[in-house]
Amino acid sequence: MKTRAVRLYGKEDLRLETFDLPEIADGEILAKVVCDSICMSTYKCAEQGADHKRVPKDVANNPTIMGHEFCGEILEVGKEWQDRYKPGMRFAIQPNINYKGTMWAPGYSYRTIGGDATYIVIPREFMECGCLLPYNGDNYFGAALSEPLSCVAGTFKAMYHTKNGVYEHFMGIKEKGKMAMLASVGPMGMAAIDYILHTDRRPSLLVLTDIDQSRLDRAASIHTVEEAARQGVELHYVNTGKLEDPVAELIKYTGGTGYDDVVCFAPVTPVVEQADAILGTDGCLNFFAGPARKDFYAKVNFYNVHYASTHISATSGGNTEDMAECLDMMSKGKLTPAALITHIGGIDAVIDTTLNLPKIPGAKKLIYTHIEMPLTAISDFEEKGKTDPMFARLYELTQKTNGLWNREAEEYLLKTLSKEEA
Image 1: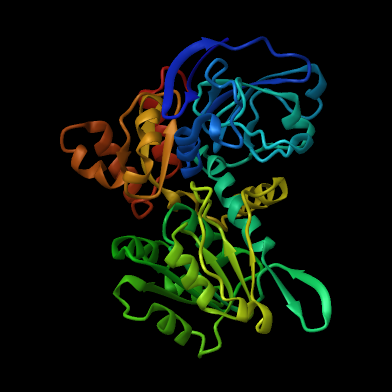
Image 2: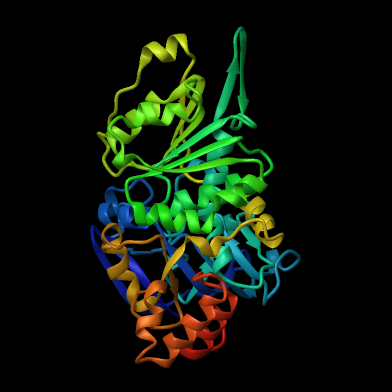
């Protein structure tokens, strides 16, 4: 079968190409990709090329398919998996397969599987590791966003606390504790807010910071103070760019004791140091943001490490259990993945979007691989609709959900622009 995909050949060398996929073996699955969410990790992969830990050294001669946050439909199942998977099933992929100790993942390492493609062949190891997950939602975009949501689920579970004289780590955030999330209204921060407000283990105080007031305002309109209060959480949005002494002001929200849990969403030295400075006794700092630089450093107060038992944790992605949990939460209406999406585009928009991702405002950029469409902000639908009836209809549909992407808009877009029905 022919596929159309964006492939990586080297640093900033991405190419949209049509080529033949191999026939599936008995241990493989043929699938159709419907949508992929472009991640900052994808940008880093494109920027670093073969220097990236997950990219094969021979990528210049054997290119890999980009994209790791995707959803689709199974078309054909090899003999070995026909008792577990059926044609027509919708699926999500957990990219962190941890196969035999390698760091290989779709979107970085594989030649037949990645999210920025029309069709893919799923290798045996994904099924062996339980990383091909059935999805029962009524849309495709939710499953594509289950990967970033699983990353934040893993983050909160990896945080830990201690007790004096007990040589054991108690995993997870401090229940009903005090939490701050810094630089936290970007795409992954939005995912984290959604998850932590609706999972079973929640803080009693949650302070969210950024230096971009428009992003803070958008987050506050989606994850409201009132909704947080219904979940038993006192929520505050704080623009630290307007504060003369951010550390002192942030600590005031805790009554002067500091925070039990702090998550840092930006690989920026002053932000990391701010996160360290607001920790309370036994406070856990999770450095969520993956820096592109290998020589990234920040100061840590080792006096507090010794006498106040402060400590650092970090995660790089979630696991299959985290993704399954998020898919289940979506099916129960506990998560709103559409809140992460600010832009929609087709497969022809992948290269430019990926290479310029840090310069494009907004949150998640969602790509539908069976259509061609310039990357377009949902907030621009109204203006574009004045001259284009398709955008006029998309604006009308998204207005039903407070300006958020939704199932009706997805179905209309695919029906209007796809050459085949998704």
